[in-house]
Image (cartoon, rainbow, N blue to C red; front, side, top):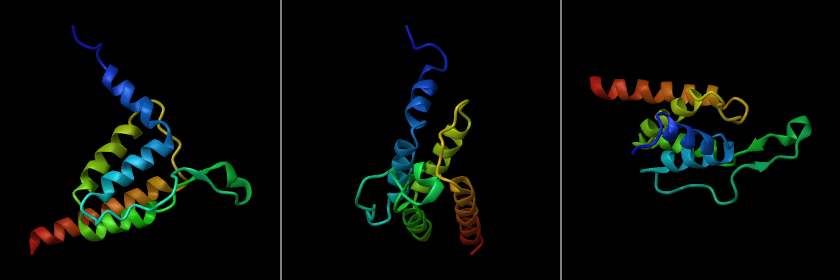
Length: 120
């Protein structure tokens, strides 16, 4: 007797609706093959700057993403799958402001670099 159809997806998606858990997992995936330079300190802390003070901040996300790009980390492909997976959910997580724009720019840079490597 197996699980009902879609149950696995529902369980995983429910866990990843928490932006802190999602960003933490993304940072772990991106840190693969980048010398283990995850930032110290808690993820998802709340900033105290003006009206956006209730929005979670994720220290080290940009740095981890840039390190993954520079190292052409294998984790980028897995992170892409994860982002697509959670954004396809009926209730996608509330990500940091501009995260998707940053992610899309980083993914485009990764794709262009990979394509240029294939032609040389």
